[in-house]
Image (cartoon, rainbow, N blue to C red; front, top):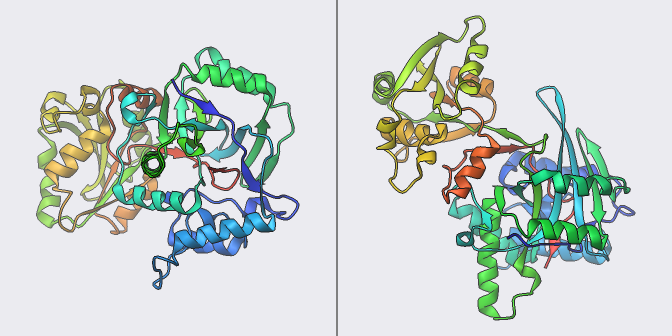
Length: 432
C-alpha cells in the first residue's frame, strides 16, 4: 500500500550552528504571535523564519512571509548554515519528553511517502480541516519547494517487525543530538538492506494521518498543480511528502483531548442549557470544591465502556460540575448529519459538537466563539475567571478509535485529537 523512500535530508551545519536547541521550532499551527517573537530572538538561525515567518502591514506580492522565507533558505544554503546529506536516508527520531511527571520516549522514522489521493485509502485521514490553513501551506510549498515540518502518521506494527528493525539501527551514533527540556536524537538509516525491509513492510500497510492533515492536503494540491504545469512520468521529487511514521503501539504516543471553551452566549441560552441536557443525559452535579471531585471526573471520563458517551460541563450551574452520561444514543444520532458512520455518531466529541454546541446552544453563528485547551484545570479556571462562559471536558480518543474511524472512510470533527508533544520543525527537512 504505502510507498516510502529515503531522501537526502537538509539540516543545520553543526560546524557553524553550535546551539541546535535554539534553532528548532514547533510546527506553524501552534506558533502564537508571542512565541513567534520569542523564536526570532532565540537565534538568528531559528527555523521559524522558514516554517512560519512574520507578516508585515507592508506585505505585497513581491515581498511577504513566503518570499522572505525563500530568500532566507537560499541565503542559508549558500552560506553553509544548512547542508544537504549526500546519502539519502530514512531518519530514526527518538523524542524524549515528560508529561504529568512521567518520562516518555516516542520513536518515529522520517521518510518520503508517495502522495496518494484520499479515495485510494492508502493514506487515511481521521479529522476534518480548514481551508485557510491549506492555503497558507500551499503558498509556502510554492515558495520553498520543500516540506519544512513532518506530517505525523500512524501505522500498525504487526508482530513488532518495524520496531525490531529500528532497534538494530539504534546502535549507530546520532547525527543530531540536542536537548533543552525535551531531547531529540536523530540517526540516519542508510543501509540498503534495512531500507529495503522497511519499504517492503510498508508496501502492505495503510498509513493514518494523525497530525498534519492540512499539510498533506496542501501537498496533494501542490502535486496536482505541478503536474498540470508539466505533465510527466510521475517520478518527480514533488510526488513525495515528508512524514514521521509512529506505531499505534508506541508507548510514547500521547493523545490529549481538546476541551471546548465557549463564550458569547446569551443569558437565556446559558440558563436553558441544564434543562436542554436532561432529555439526552443522566446528569450528576458535583460541587467543584468537593473532596475527590477530580477523581470522580476521571472515573467518568476514563472509566466505563469504550462506547459510552461521557462529558463534563462547568459554568452551567454556578460553581458545580455537571457529569453527563448519554442515556439514548438513538436520539442524538438523529441530530447528526446522516452521512456519518454509526461509530462517528457515538463519539464524545461528535455528540458535544453536534448536539450540545450546535443544537442546544446555537454555536456556529453570530458572536459565539469556541477555543480549546488541553488541560481540564485550565479550562475550569478560565470559566471561573469569567474569560469564558462554559467549559466542556472530554476524554482522550484512543488510537484504535482513530484507526476505526479512518478505516470506515469517515472523519472526526475538527479538533478531536491533540498529539503531544508536536514533532518539531528544523531537525531535518525535505527539498524537492
